[in-house]
Image (cartoon, rainbow over all chains, first blue to last red; front, side, top):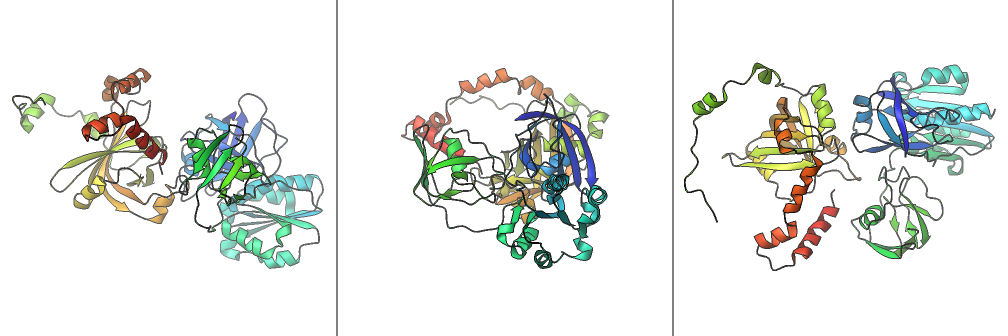
Length: 302
Length: 209
């Protein structure tokens, strides 16, 4: 964890605040567009937010937080109770949504999903790669960074207030996509579902901030063989691998516990994991909070 | 078994009044009829409360509720919601609330001497928007208790000062009490190894949600 101080907290759109977190003990860890950090809040909750500032700024991180109407206590705490000057622990940046080189980019952002897209757009523009942004939100007042985007990128940015204008035709965007162009999308579930229906899967990279609604086969019990320690942990059908490992004394970290943040990554050495996350686990890795096993045993590197 | 040979004397309300006098004006003034920003701040940082209810005949009950700070949601300036997490399944509170909706809450914040008292009327709900705000480890509680606030006020810290409740040295008191397994084995006259019983209870504590 990195020690920071809340340097600045400011309302930047309807129900959205921006937080600037200054490193308390020197420069903060470097990051690249698409990265997120965990904020350890004073009410014991840990929440993930995409970094939306400038990666060249090693003094501070910037995040933007929407007050969720159904907040469990994360965004509500930040909006109502977090104050300038408060010390805050922040994780090292993680990136499950990296910007890969491409000849052209189309960025799609829905509401607060603009946050990871913002540094991507800046990076693309800085390296003179053609890039455009379609930014959707219910109303312009609810959409952060609209003025900055308009003044920095002009007509490369299209702002769509869906309450008045409806959602733009993604199929039309897809058919107008130039060959080689790659799409990066972040936003609420329905927007991502529409994007997945419209764009070829090989050319769409999406990040979710909520798990996609899916159903899985009923849980089965399995064994996790911890190769380094030589211990075997039984995972009952009503317990997650993460909880079983924690209860057995393995200090596996955790964050969202919904398969979106990636804090609980575990290396798998053998066996057949059943991936239930929304990150897309790389080969030989799994997320212990939601993923289980198709084989009766998994060998993990613990 | 020991028993006092004579019952302690019962005071009349007038005698109590004569002994205690009138409450100070400041004490009366601090009682509010809604959740203001300071009560909201307190609730957002409180991981524990005790909840008192009684049935139609006045048979009373007090039960502990705890979770991460802010586990009690302030729905608006007059309404709270308390999640019902897996506990002992005895559901005394719900039986009482069905007959008598009066409820008294005492919120604590570790390290803080002052406490928050909230009194009002309560009912159970399964409103999905309320339960969604209480989701923990991807699980919603099955139901929640909605409290319509009638009065709320801070209670002074003397009781917590005298009790040294937050003094780390006070935790040595816990060492004087046998393990729950030993107590349960003795109380229920169970012919079972207290260590094994403690182990079973500890296993049960692993599943908190």
